[in-house]
Amino acid sequence: MNLPEKVTLVEVGPRDGLQNQPHTLTPAERIAFIELLSNAGLSQIEAGSFVSPSRIPQLADTDQVFKGLAANTAVRYFALVPNVKGLEDAIDAGVKDIAVFTAASDQFTQKNINCSVEESLERIAALMPIAEQHNLRVRGYVSCTLGCPYEGQIDPERVAAVSKSLMDLGCYELSLGDTIGVGTPENARQLIRTVSKQVPLSALAAHFHDTYGQALANLYAVLQEGVAVIDSAIAGLGGCPYARGASGNVATEDVLYMLNGLGIETGVDINALLRANHYVCSHLGQPNHSKVAAALQPIKP
Image (spheres, rainbow, N blue to C red):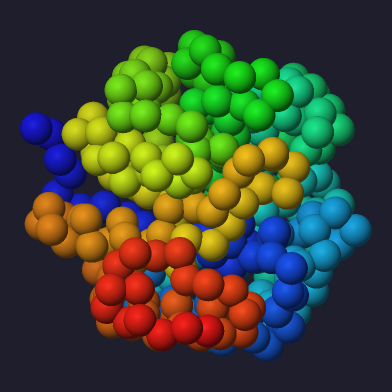
């Protein structure tokens, strides 16, 4: 068994977790939420996106969030940007790390961002010189890597080709998303084996949703393949508004409990995570979807 000694947890709750919620947090509430996550020891936090508010109104005013966050050299706060306009807005807000996104499914990108996969890569290519000019680090997302709500099963070779294109464009890391949570341990393992032939294993992250309750099992499988970066969301928040059947992300608390049990270092404190969990669930008026948080802190919002 080839488990990593240390895993980086990338907290996506403040962006991916909030984008599909019926209740919108104020910028001040989002800042307080993010700082609770920072205080828990999370070193990478997706703090928002610069997507048009007409598309994702829950993430409007992300510029105010970034401007209001206290400087913290121990944490990288990054933002999702869809195009040059979003990148320019992020730069104006003082963002230093960004994420770009595409998918392994043309039908999904058409539903999500009104273009093909190839056209999405062209949009990303247009961003890269500007990002380089401003010394921004760029993380890449690939959605629908284990299945698509429109195309069904996805060929891992297709994922590998898209991933290589993103790396060639200049992304330092690629987050492979099981956007609708249909993966199982064996095809998650095969995904990593296939993609790592085109992209360094050290540059791969797992971003698994838990629709069918398989996310932890899938993460354990890819940990055995050597993946050492995991995306997760506090309280299991999330879901894609443009993907039918996509439920929440795997819960950060549940992933942390598993990693602690495996003796894998993360630097994250479970008790501090519970405080962030209670804060965000209370303010959203939403139930907590983390089994670990429910067991350790059975508080209703």
